[in-house]
Image 1 (cartoon, rainbow, N blue to C red):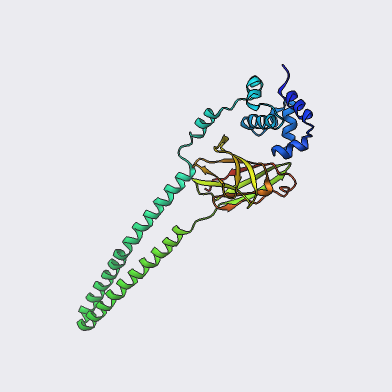
Image 2 (tube, rainbow, N blue to C red):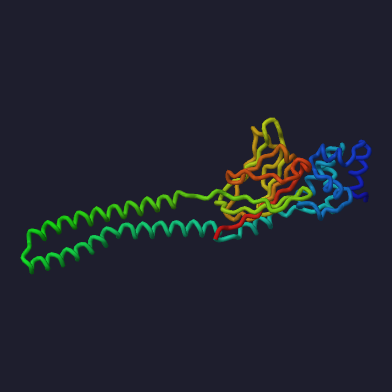
Length: 291
């Protein structure tokens, strides 16, 4: 049987297209087009993209992509989505869940301590007042003692309320303060960029859109599983992907980098330095859990 790569290459040449022409038309990187023609599927970003790129290549050069995939199914890697789903669902409990539970516990404990402060301070004041009364009784100065007792009780109560109020305000500030996601570009070369993501509060979302008047082809994977839908995005029709609690890896394949905007939990992702020269790129994000 004639190899699928030879069929595609022959169809491309018959159309008079160069690999550079096809890259512009399909938005698939040239190195992936060469890999398809040579049958070298190992360098592709995943089995899903092998099939998707072959179909897009075939349709562009005038062939029936679905039929071509069916005729050569034995040599094209299969997509094993079910095993990945089971594997990704095995995380229990997640670090994010543990962290949230810890925050809740700390808050309740702090509230309990604050509620006991007035009682403790009042008890200390009462003991001091009793001692003062006893000493004053021995000296016979009862009137002065009564005035001092009333003054001490008033001051102690006021001090207790101020202490509790101050503690509540400080605790409230600590609870409201939240860190936004930090996205750091580690490396970028040959159309592949790697990022580290910290302070990401899961569950969250990834949003991909295009600049005004532009469009781009997008595909997103979370923990190795391709998310639906994928396809063309515009400024009016963005793509939003939910990120579950067990998110550890995110991969975004972008067809037209200069026209694309990516936001992770509201944080705009910095583009690779070569995003103007290499339009079709793969962006890989590793989510670092906060201890």
